Length: 108
Length: 122
Image 1 (cartoon, rainbow over the protein chains, first blue to last red):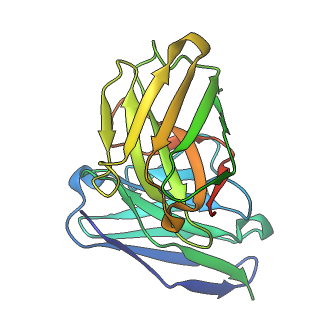
Image 2 (cartoon, helix red, strand yellow):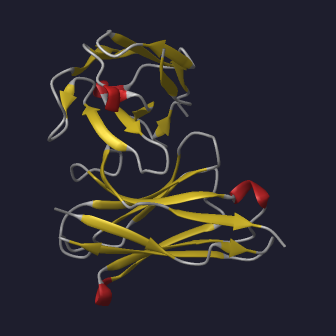
């Protein structure tokens, strides 16, 4: 199965700053089938990005995804207070689909 | 808008079978061409896909639990269910039901239930 490694484990930033989160796959992700989710405490994950770069319905345009092959990035252009959460990547190009271990975005 | 809601016991004894149901509203589990899945998250840890079922009843399971898991449809009340046998403490987790974004077994999950915490303990 494809192992996804997310970095950093924790990212300390202030509102208004730019966040760059990384997701690296142990092998190439087929057809760039890579998704990003946001999870807040006590809540289910929320789909942000699919197909590596397509925003899901209702997701603000400050969220953007990029990358191909084995290296993918989620960028939040200007952090809002509600963006501080845990972010997970998921590859769904190969079975079983797998998730990264998460990056926690903390307020500095 | 599709909505999902998990239900089931919050405590299961070791070696017994964990059983959860997922009630779906705003869509049909038996007539809409989507996969419906189960994902779990141990306390403080990441997400693990358990398996998915198609509206036709075809199932796909993660090899990590394949020998112990059964996912089925309950079309009469628009639900689908998860059974995980021979549970151990390692199966303690929040269990989510979800629906994929498009009509593929390997797909992003667009709609999620709120999650059901299941603890395995005697």
